[in-house]
Amino acid sequence: MNRWVLVGVLAVVLPASLLAAVMFGAVSLPAADVWSVLTGGPVEARVELIVEYIRLPRALLTALVGALLAVCGAAMQGLFRNPLADPSLIGVTAGASAGASLAIVFGGALSGLVGLSLVSLGAFAGGTLAVVLVYRLATGAGGTSVATMLLAGIAIGAIASSLSSLLEFYASNDMLRRISLWRMGGLDGANWARVAVVSLVGLVVLGILPTQARALNALLLGESEARHLGVAVNTVKRRLILVAAAGVGVSVAVAGAIAFVGLVVPHIVRLLIGPDHRWLLPASALAGAILLLWADTLARVVVAPTELPVGLLTALLGAPFFISLLRHRREYAL
Image 1 (spheres, rainbow, N blue to C red):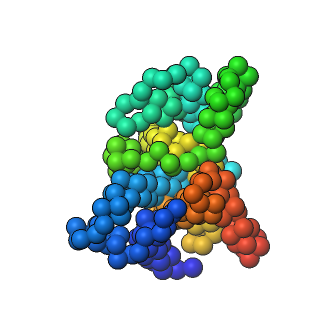
Image 2: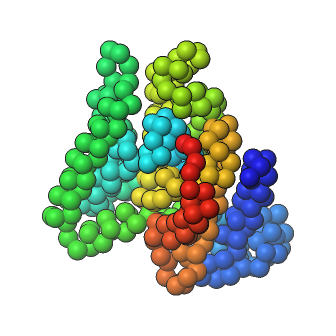
Image 3: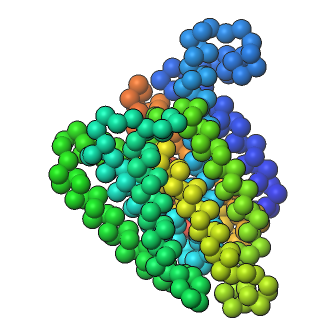
């Protein structure tokens, strides 16, 4: 597929997906009413309340989280030159899960900070600590070893998973339910404060990662070849890991563990337009935002007024499309 065509289509579909996410839910709203709220026109107070304080912040947060997960997944796959790599390989998700479990079991009624719940803060702290440990284990006098980082990520992830299981063993039934729901992912806690926090991190991540596209393309040839091409390999690796950890950490903190987006969306985009990171990174961000928006919208309407955990739907929506692409293109390069 032509790269310009794909990026153009995604750029058009994203605003339409945002509008659909605001319109549909337990209460469906006409597009004209949504437009009136956005432009300051006359509209019922009930509709204005739903759009301004419930649907719009949730749609924006969903798009940001989807974009961050997908673009960080694309960067990690390029850095590790591994099609199975995603941010969870450096321990972010397992560490965040352990941090969230700790907050749920021992946090009690303590409140959070700047719109983030204590569970979100615990998840962010756990994910950050895991990445710091993995990075320190993989870094020596000769620089940061990608292979050691993968192994250290697996080890730290195993420790964090064991800690989470230990906490579940001692947790009450109510705590177990909260931990289980957090792991399924959900955006029901969206508010403007969370949108502001994720937007700030998103500006940094979505601003820095595309500037590393040429370095990622060079790293696909191997670290030695990248050095010969003038790439500061260790600096690039450190920058990519820290930026991806920040993007995934804040996403997991506000939305829980949403699987599939960071792993498979970059593959879908790569199948369509190839491995050039100058196109892969922005296209993955757009596709991740769109996929998560539609998954969250369906999660709110399928069994309305009850909501399904969005993490359950991301795989159900994306996996069949991914399998279809694989059947049509059996071979492709990372």
